[in-house]
Length: 119
Image (cartoon, helix red, strand yellow):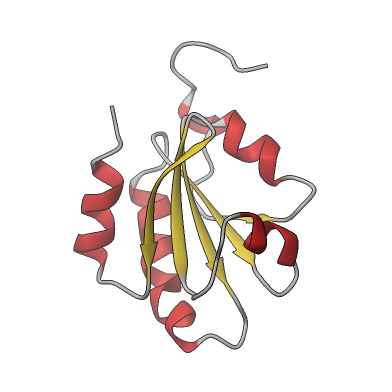
């Protein structure tokens, strides 16, 4: 059950959470704005954006929650969202996908896409 009102800052992690098929749906429903990083161990561009995702998680703590989802370990979720290339970031607002970024992009672009959905 979703709680109304402002969520306390301490309820927001300041680093990405490892998501999987067991906790994914609960996590995207728990927070108003969630960015999911679909990645894999062998993906070079995924490793390139990993530090950016870490920075954004710290900078937007209290407003946005970041999840990391390994597509090799969670194939059903990758298929459910039509992940064909990685890295792919999907932004969820109130539990529903509202935006997608495919590929490794610089921090300013990712930040602009996230800010677009903050309200």
